[in-house]
Image (cartoon, rainbow, N blue to C red; front, side):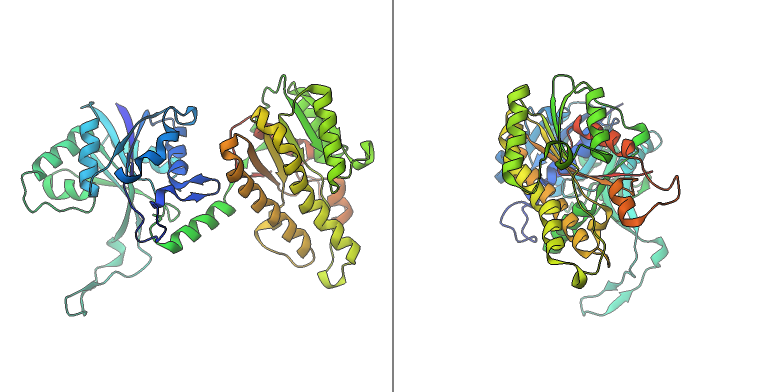
Length: 452
């Protein structure tokens, strides 16, 4: 059967208090509905996507029509006044009578492939499927007088999520029967099945706590933090080397370690690579004039810049109150100001090619750690810079990502921690393999963790 994902984006955002539909709020460089669409677009079991949008804001999604990013998106249609009205409008727009339908809230952007796949697969055995998670809280029933009237057994209770999945014939039949009921009321589509087709069993797929619905103002803050801490994991042993033939890659910090390995791999992938570093070319990335000179040289030599990679950084270990002033300035300039300078100076060339900027962070960005507080702070700054630039540059077609390597055997790390047991560290080649792979895909605004 054909499988169609119906993204329900009819909300108006009243409870979120934003003045715009919450599905249009931008988090981590993209609107919430875009994040949701990406999961369905990338899932191999989804054949087609339809978006049911708030009629008053449907024009806000015109930029998605015909987008190469969402090749499965066939229709963006106005929704109804209620959730059930919207489902009925979607059914009217779907000519197929023998297909699988997944109805999913646009404001649940953390839906994962496992849930989608289990819902689709369950429809081979059932005609209706819900997604739910166990309740961590005791649920109570309260009467009109404000007093408890019942306390259901918590172990039997679940909190409903989406997707809700159905065979087309089943959900159509349930709504056909419901139309004849003048008192028809339901809060979701499984409720319609449960009431009007009680003989149809509704299978339950296990959801996740992350598959939250963004409804209240606090939900937006939580979602923003989840996106900030969320990272794409890359196994360097399985990261394919992209074809970079005809492209120009500029690597700052390419004289040794991860930078040198990145230079070598990008050349192997067919790119023209220009490497700049303090030791080899006298390039100080914390000085804007040096950055500008290097970029001008790259354009003069190749006529274009497709990718800029900054691997240079400094790690010093000492309590902040004991750190020399010059060392503090050096750390901030090299770890944080340099990425900002390189971003500003390279943007115009990357805009011409629809290219990418790749920065480097560290696992310490998630939490400041005693002994290298300033290093942690600057690496957190790199992540925030990455995500902000990805949003600022999205319309210009320039991608920005940050590589987050697990502990790596580099001269900088050896100088800070000494020799460590063999096999416990990534090699510079491992990290370079993942870095090159990122240059060849369409990711933006992501923190890509490279792990053993």
